[in-house]
Amino acid sequence: MKQNKKIKPLVSVVTVEPRHVERFWPLAEFMVTEALNYSGKYADSKHIYDYLLKDLMQCWIMFGSDEEEENKVFGVGITRVSEMPNFNQLEVVICTGKRRDLWEDQFVDTITKFAKSNGCKRLSLWARPGWEKVSKKWGWQKKHVQLEKWLDK
Image (tube, one colour):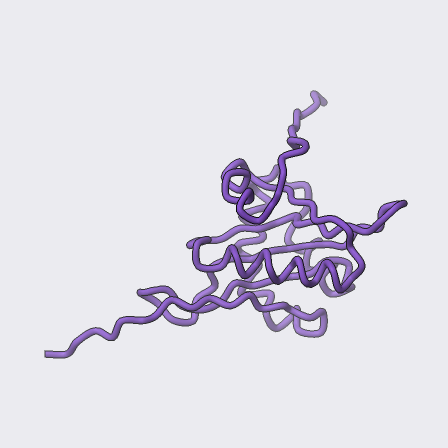
């Protein structure tokens, strides 16, 4: 009788350099599209792709294995460095995926290091309500809430 090998969960946050965006985009695009659809379609995945190629945004892919599957994409993050008059900030504009428990800490650590190395003084997150509760463990504070209202045409 053959025994199923238990896989030890291991997910890494992979930084996608602009020169590698074309190669890795097929792994991220479906999650980016889904997040944009959920967020009111303020952009298309093609817009994000173009910004990534121009190094105006950054792509982070959460890749690895859980107890069931090996070599799987668990999440995608899209960030941008915004130059403000008094300081720069790293904005997380998309962060989506499955099994957040396997990658959330590493994602926050990775983007925090990236932000510091790029002279950012603040992290800013556009997030769904579920992130508010979990983000407290990393020292995030609720300062504002992004609300939206569609205007009549």
